[in-house]
Image 1 (cartoon, one colour):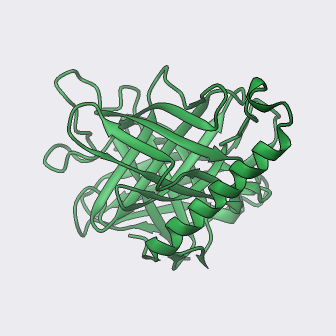
Image 2: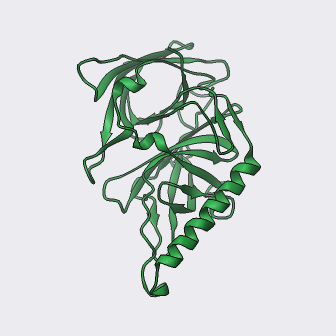
Length: 293
């Protein structure tokens, strides 16, 4: 598991300051007052922060700059989850505000079921939670006073706290994530997943990814640079296609952040966030993997 040290008080104060600054900037630039729409915010990117006090990396993409698809991967203190935008309910900006709303599906592991299976409700769908969060493009998403999530099926509410990670704007190259990665405490405590992304000297866009864990599960597939259909510009986000045990197809996204000590968070090693599910979300593979070699 990625080792993360954090100063949550400093982190929260920083976010409040950033949001207030962003709000003042937007107000001063809007000379016509409330009759003009609030400035459009772009929440595409790689984000890091907290959900449920759990360190989380978020990957947000868009096909049209109006509807945003989120995949949030959390792993900290023996808690693991993957929250994914619900089909047909993307994250969208509320008119005349910087607030984004939407629904996420909780694809947390069922540790008593088959390996990598998801805790499914009797409705045969993962638990869902509604979220709302204020956003400032390439700066902040959520915050202690500007966000909330609420589960539909249980009495749990909380906040989202994320800041933008600049690795999203680095020119992507598949060889930047080539090598061996380890994900600890996958499915259950002390189960380690080893993933190998095979360097490709002739193609910088895609590579083969293979892996295994201590339970005998195997992973085999591809990882390719994600291209946004909006501007066709590649970003440091990757499309993932895996076969679990040679018969379960999993698709999703991956992104990485570098070793860092900034803004109240310390990430001790280069870290890959990877999350993928099968079509009906009954199987989920996700976690934070540290770069080994």
